[in-house]
Length: 399
Image (cartoon, rainbow, N blue to C red; front, top):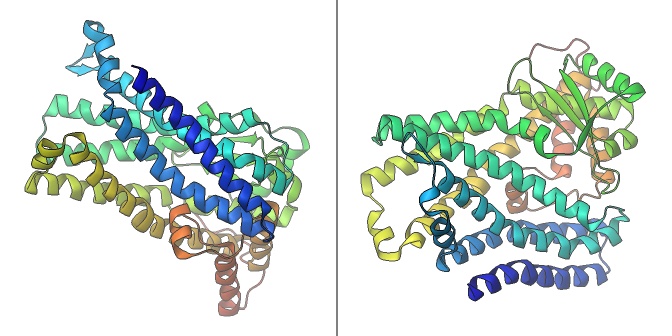
């Protein structure tokens, strides 16, 4: 028990100290602010993947999950042969342990971010931001796994059932994931003149959302917008207050059109198809080749490490490549709706408001699922040269 407690403490403290030291060194350099922030973001991208992997390995090496399940004992509740309490405990403990180093990393880097960008958010605000992201992830993964296991318990575990179950849970999970913002993010309905402004801009690009919500972004100087629109009739727009403050109407209209472009292009469903294809091949390969020998020889690591290797390739190379392409497509959609020059101005505004470096390496852009702002601006400007149009279409096309 003492070793497990020491491990959990180390998960929180060591990443904090390591990233605090690195962030202090970055802060002391004489590089431009955008370059220093970019260095911090790169380090966080690496830490965001390696720290959870290390946490899960330690979690199982110290048998923390087994101790929690032993404490539940005979109190476990089963529905159709599915152990609800045991499954819930595994998900909660796993994500709780993974959250510790991520919080430590965020707290270690934020003082430097606050100094460089002159933000006002408290450390608690940073912690709640990490907790919100982890909450959305935990619910998405928990629902997907629970659905997958429930399908197995009812229909068996043959390969066709496994593949069909994977497809079902992935598409349900991808379809519902944007709406989890309503549960985990602090937001308020957009009202008054700001609502009238956004309503008007949405209508001008041919989009009528069911609800408009404001997210807090002033204290972190975050200019961002997103749309939950996978379910027809349940389309919501979320914007940070900092975005509304920083952008004029033309820029905000282009940003909204970009987000609507993701919905019109069914980009989330494309990501779902890719996910089913990748992990469907994994399931089929495991059924054909069999990875049981690895698990028998190396225990949990015999399954976990190969799976995480596949996930890294999926998330960075495959999903990252698709997401990059989708961002260019959404920019092109916005340019057609509101004009190329307005779209370029919006991208430049986002770069300035968020202190984002306009150039970044390919690996970084794949890991973040976004091309560099400079590449996006160049692509939109190439569209101007190709069409000779700087204004875009006056009449929105149907999505």
